[in-house]
Image (cartoon, rainbow, N blue to C red; front, side, top):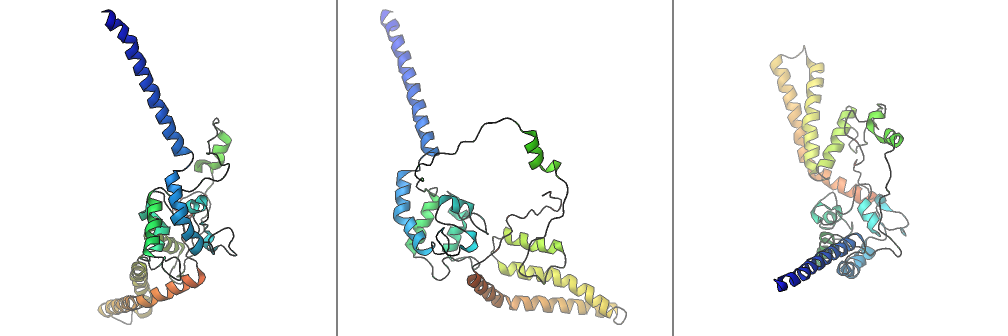
Length: 286
């Protein structure tokens, strides 16, 4: 009995030490996650990634560039995460969702960077692996983790920011390249939204589908206005159908030329606009 009583405090002390050790390990892990980036990841970045960004991207996408193209900066972690006119350049941990990785693979005819020459396969693999590991970037000297400031509920600030206190105002429709196609503001929103949903891919689907819908309605309205009364119902329907088919067929056959023209203009202008900041809710409050 005496031995059991003497062992009880030792067992309790061992349990307490174990709990303390676990808590310390958890604190260290948390500090590593919120503080300095992984040293191995930073070393990989400095050896494999930074040289590629400096050689192939800095001339157009760095603070030292004569003209920053597409408002995109690739010389800082903040610039990559913020992105440019087309949205964030990377999604850490998800290369398949990162526009930078999509661009360097040259599989998207609407998005190919660097524009003049594709990177080497090893460089593409290194950039992809870097994004997959979380895109580690060396911390700036003297930088400290951002800490959210604690504060109480501010009713006036909430009123200034929340939609329910804001008056309804008209929304400016997004500008679209095919300015001749939209017949109303709704069409402009549709084209811009389709481009976002397809991430700029499948240009043929957008051009042909817009022709099928737009020219179909156009044929119905204008053929009817032009020939109603002079053609019978059967002939009128045939004329509408023939014009609709002819315009859709032309758009389909012209798709390769459309691709070539769009690709050429994007490379010359180095500009591809995505309306990521447009609110597509027709009842939205600014």
